[in-house]
Length: 81
Image (tube, rainbow, N blue to C red; front, side, top):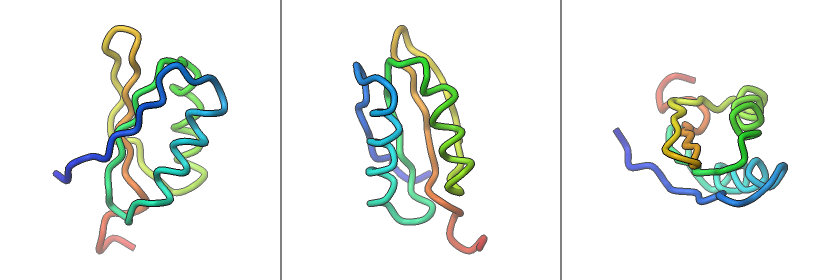
């Protein structure tokens, strides 16, 4: 698996984690991974909804204490379009 780019969106409130996620995803190629770490529980709904609208995939979601982690994949993996 590719190494994920890290995005620290902790201590930011809606809509900033989604905006920062969009900015980071725009810089990555199709198939790349982005791991977002946030503390706003709204990301559990907002980021997956944003991914569905924009054609990205949520690979995994988990929590460690107050930190919420989302592993996202940009667009479609190479060769699947």
